[in-house]
Length: 89
Image 1 (cartoon, rainbow, N blue to C red):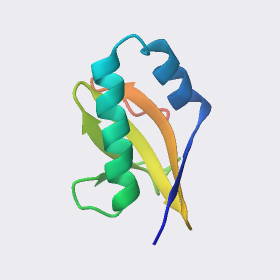
Image 2: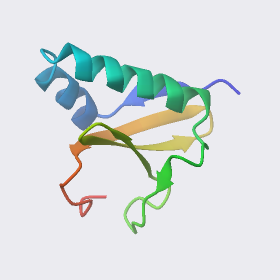
Image 3: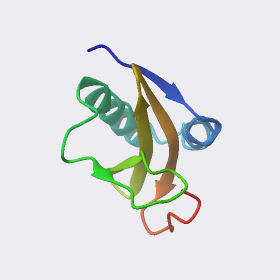
Image 4: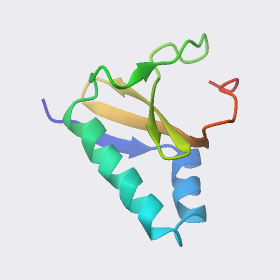
């Protein structure tokens, strides 16, 4: 199955803010590609959230990528610092 990736405003804002850190952006894009290949991989953990019950998370260094799948789309909700809380999700 072929998936398309869409970034929400928060995720694209994060990438623009950290655009000068080429290594981090490269790692994030590699993780996007990995998510696109198999979004149901068991390494992507389910968030325990009432606001976003379909959301999953994966780690990239000191950051987490929050995403969910719907039909043929993967929506990247946000990229947050690992120590931040998930209360907004």
